[in-house]
Length: 511
Image (cartoon, rainbow, N blue to C red; front, side, top):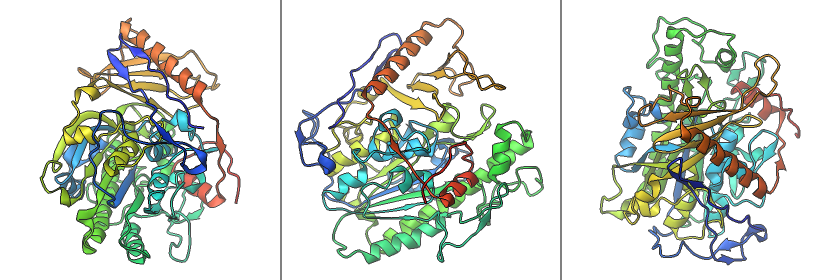
């Protein structure tokens, strides 16, 4: 049975309106007996592209602040910047969570993490949830994925609905050992972005019926750490004189900085930024190679191409490197670009920049509308179709409140709007790990876009209002939650996750 929509919580004192999920007419022919809606929202004329190929490229841990066309002052992403001139760019797009497990599951379903339940390494996506691959597969698409991070792979349900998927994080004759984890000594294959293009080409050339539409899902590891891009990318921005603790870009040292075991002075912080930017530049190079595969086969102009990330990456803006742990924008803001097929022809969707709040959860309902297929009965994302086509007033997005959660148990929770960020922080004693009283942080983004001046303890009436809303929304999600599905993953996957810096104490099971 499909989960019913949640009621809308009023946000009068916070000056916002929460996104409400809407049920729709149903037909009972979805996989697993789940009902599927028969049509689009009442009164809306879909912007349809026909059965075009869909290419979805996801970069892991790509902080939007480091992308050239989004305002960065370094030439980190020349190929993405050129692509943006042909696409619609959402300048303020977010992931609902600052970590891959929850972010990818939300991206492929359009659901909030606390609705789909994939929030820790012991949990996977339930079989009764719809993924984009399932939705497209049931209307005749060939579906193929290449995944470079096990947290976005089969073990956690993100590959539901794919005809085939290739986990390039496993070792094989084609993928030999290329990295020894400094902490454990484990020999692993760290996937690299240059592996994607030839595999994409092989998929395109090997399809039995090349006239069928396809979905390609490419989850690239870079710029995620370890920051070990090959030359010339590794040294592109790094000071050659730097010989401090982060020179190797390895996760062991970077994670140690989070726990205060390796102090990071100004030169060290700059070195981490330099290595990250080099790794991002390498990812950008690999993106061009993938687009070249499409162009060489004459199908680039036929494709709906979406480029985004699963979450961001902090560079010590709030005293911390990496992701997972906070809900400041650097950990959750991501790029989001959509390029329509060239046959559109009128230029209306070329080089467009939008400043409305958007979410990676918007991808599923948007693709459904662009392809004129029934979306899932319930999604937490919003279709961007009318907004892009000029059929919807952007005012409908101006009061949007994005729900965010981190990976804690219990998690910290946030509401992010155009004007403000409210965070319900779970506080623990550093020595005993005993949970202390929760507190609210509040940032007026209109005057404090860097989230540096916390108004949580100032008596601002918006703080109490936001706390009540967050708690009420979480209760509604918990009351509607279907339950968890258990995840199992291999020792090799566990070792790679450890090498990528995922150091929680959960014990892997399975083969």
